Structures are given as structure tokens and as C-alpha cells.
Image 1 (tube, one colour):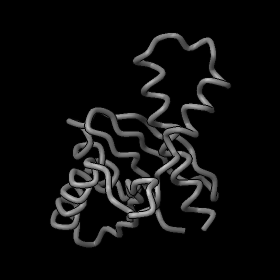
Image 2 (cartoon, one colour):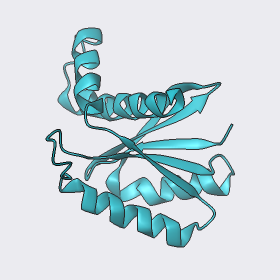
Image 3 (cartoon, helix red, strand yellow):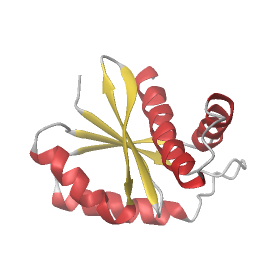
Image 4 (tube, one colour):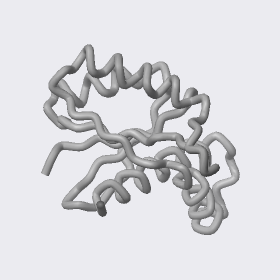
Length: 136
């Protein structure tokens, strides 16, 4: 199996997940400003050779993209130049945040600190994206 890192991309926080024996596990949530350094660390230690990143298509039938998609494409182009050997795959992420939020609300009702909830939400979204990718 490939050494996969899944990214739930955001402009403030990014959720990361990895597979362990075909099951997705949350790795960490990183600040946008630390994403490249974090990826560098995993690539240099040969932990990853494939990145899976969500594709933000609109729910409408016209398949229009959300504004964040421009940032994602810019990020992917940067990765392709810096790491030409890296395999980059995309997966539909339309409902991952909503499902993660539902899961978080129903599973962790005691977590009242908003910042902590957001960090967990990003990690759960990355887990859901990766599990969907692994299932296909």
C-alpha cells in the first residue's frame, strides 16, 4: 500500500490523516502557515509518497467550484514543483465537513471550547476523506 497523507485543506487549519492497515486515522491538525514544513517532515522521513486532497465542488449540478479550490490548486502546483515524485490524488469532499460536524456534535458533547472543536473537526474531516478514498 502507498504511504498516503490525506489533507482536509483550509485557509486557517488543515486536518491530516493517514491509513493504517486500510483504516484512516487522524494524524494532526496544523496551522496553514506550518503545512509545508509538516509535509516536508513526512516526505523527508519517507512516510508518504501519495497525497490525497479534497476537491471542493459545489453541490449544484453545474459542478462549479468553491473559492478555496483556487488555493488548493495553487498548493498542488507548488507540491508538484517541489516534489515531482509525489503522487497527488483528488477526492470529492462536499459533505466531509458536515458529516464530521454531525459526528462531533453527537459524540463529543462535552467539548465546549470552540477552538478545540474546530481542530478536531478538521482532523475528522481528513479521516472521512481518506476512508472514502481507501474504500474506492
